[in-house]
Image 1 (cartoon, rainbow, N blue to C red):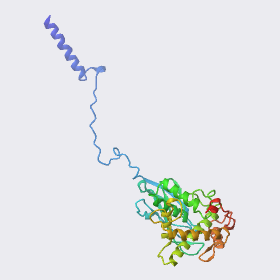
Image 2: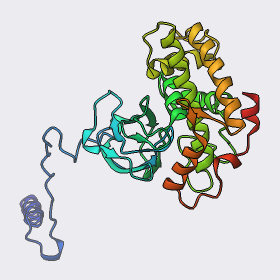
Image 3: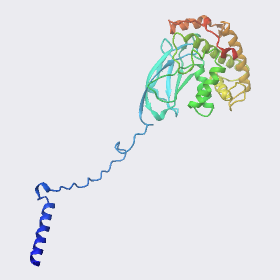
Image 4: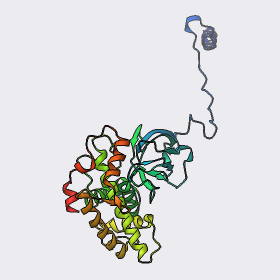
Length: 317
């Protein structure tokens, strides 16, 4: 009996072993080996997440260029570190507009847009100072106007510590509301980002030319007093001064009491002239020249300079 039991056990073990090795027909058990571990090479996109700062982003950028409308200006874009993105140069058109497509990495923002050279259609001469705007972040289409107001806004934002959403908002509020020279915020709520069309061109040309003339007269007066001062120097001093919201010589480190006093006097002169439609630029009547420039850049303009209403902020200034 013991021999029979042992024989039966041996046969059972043999049968189980045969089944486990695949010899059992429908009862076959197939084992799947563990897959080999895969080592990705450094930088392989399968393992490294994409850095959003290195992604190439495209923006359709456009805007108007003007103190008076400026044609033939070189418009250049700079990265946040000051590097020139020279392949994106543009030239303002006969209508004082520019347009370009920017393709650059997200880490290069905020971008600075600068216009230099060209011909001012009001004065017939080259501009007296460079014009600036800024792009905080990429978007599919962005308007970035370049004029005395945007230039002073960007410069003031820098003096507030750095160009950011907060400092740009603060600077634009100060410049547009307190030193807008007749800029109508009902028509142009964002002097940098509102596209200029036939309904707004007269207001922006008249107020920009008035602001530009105030800067020129300030520069000329300081030079007559023996100072080696450019219009860009005046803008830098005013921007530093306006960090406290008022042009009083007591703002940031570049604020200057003499510049503030002369600028305020020049502002009073040009405002009285502009509001009585007798603005003089370089000693000559500018009203006819502004209307001619408006007709050139926006032939369907609905208002000319003599019809521009004085906003409440302009009266307060």
